Each structure stands twice: as structure tokens, then as C-alpha cells.
Amino acid sequence: MYSALATLSGRAYASPTDPPDPPLPEVIVHASGWQPKFPFPYSANRNDVTDADITAEREMCQWFTAEYRELVRQIDRFGYNLLEASNDWTVGQIQAQADAVAANIDQSEAFLAPRAQALTRTTDFANDEHFSIYEGEAFYRLWQHLSNVGVGIKARNTSWVNGPSVERVKHWGSQIHRSHVCDSA
Image (cartoon, rainbow, N blue to C red; front, side):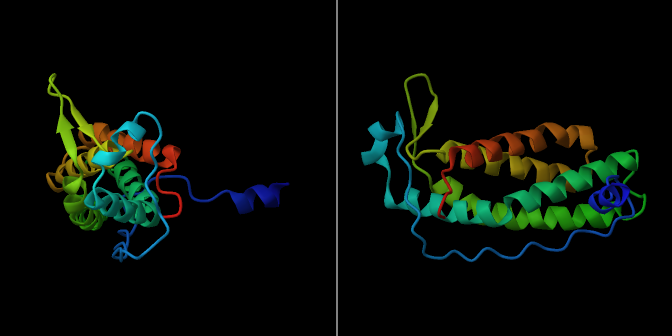
């Protein structure tokens, strides 16, 4: 029993001396059998969904499937390490870790930005925004909050300042995951 526990238990602590994370691979979009979903009430908007919406969401799904979990793992690891260093950016490898995570966020943001901004949005009489394609808002908000996290890291904010945006990234990522919108992307 003890050997099984020893085998299963990995390192479960934060360390400011951890080496920085490696760069994420660049996402190369490819043809796939992915099709958008149209559950109610999005079935009523089906005619408003453009080819640009479909292409943008397909490509964002390919990024999501390939890189989202690893990027969030890197962001969390950096946040825990920064907390372990008492938010002191001069301790150990904190600055190198920050630079690596910020570069990976920048790469993801550069991929997501033109696609998120290409999604069809309408504004109603109450000035509320609506996205024609299912989970378009989730991708748009994920991109916005990921951008906030990157800006916060580059500004050398403390972990607790970045925390709300990190949690919003996870919220929208969870919504995308639970919706199964990216299945077969």
C-alpha cells in the first residue's frame, strides 16, 4: 500500500525556483468535421450565423482543445509560485516564469483576438450584446479575460490582483468545455 501511495504522490507544492514553462506549440488550423451546434434559443439565430462565425469558432475550438488546459496549468503554477515567494518578483525564477507564461498568453491572445473579434454580435434595445453563434460569447469573454491576465503578469501584479481574471478565464473555459461545442474540432 505504501509503495502505491509513494508512486501516485507527485510533487504538490509551489516553488519559486521551478524552471520556467516551455513555449506552447503554435496552433496550426486544419480542416475538420466540426459543425456548430444550435440548441435553443440559438436555433432561432441560425440564419444570422455567418461563414466567418463558423470558421472563427472552429479555429478557436482547435486552439481550445490543443492548448487551453496547459495554458491554465501554467498560469496556476505561476500564481502559486508567486504566492510562495510572498509576491516578491526577485525571488528564484519568478521573473523567468512570468516571462514564459506571459509569452504563452501573448501567443494565445494573438491567435484568439482576430477570431473572437470576427464573431457576429448584435446589441438590443437595452444595449445588451448577443452573439449569433452558440458559445460565441464564452470564447469572446475567455479571450478578454486571458488578455487581462497577461497584462497583469506583465505589470508585475500580485497573485491576488490577477486572481479574479484567472477565475473568469476558468469560468468561460469551463462553460466551453461543458457545452461540448468543441467536440470533433
